[in-house]
Image (cartoon, rainbow, N blue to C red; front, side):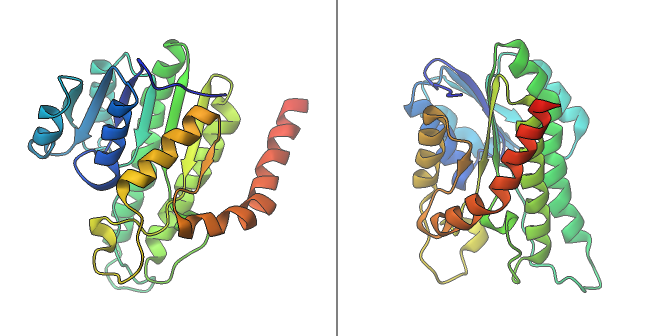
Length: 246
């Protein structure tokens, strides 16, 4: 399945900076007719709205609040493409006395993505199909010691993405995006080569329009492609074949 962006209506969570903002800008550049851009504080979306030619609709949203998500779904009933980008990262030690930051990672990264999927997948289906794009991480596939609980939460996002694809993939293209280090606030203090948010957004929509479902959008992430396709992807494809034959 391929999804063309021209003329489509999209919603992007966590649109105020970094990858989220780049995704909104890429959608506009590829001809999206409207983009609902969400952030907890819509003041942070002002410049994005002003530069969009009235195609960006700012929406206040905390993805961890189910009632808010449902209210936004009622507002944005014409959505055909949804991007779950809102995320939270904490450097929480597995044996730290206070693990509340780890709980917040799951609340935003996993539960937030699930809340969005539950609210918007039925809308996308009723609008004739489209796409769900979940921003995961290479940390979804292997735990990184500096971010162990973040890795756990992103592994859950990866599993959610697979589940959506296996159950809702007939008329919804479900993309999992697995970036490596990207030049955002999250890794601002880490000295390493980083991809630009704009290059990540380009890779996402190149994949969407070509029919791909797994996106490794930068040089570091590309190194994960072969091992992933030789291992976990084989298991996912086998499961899909088993379900199709049952």
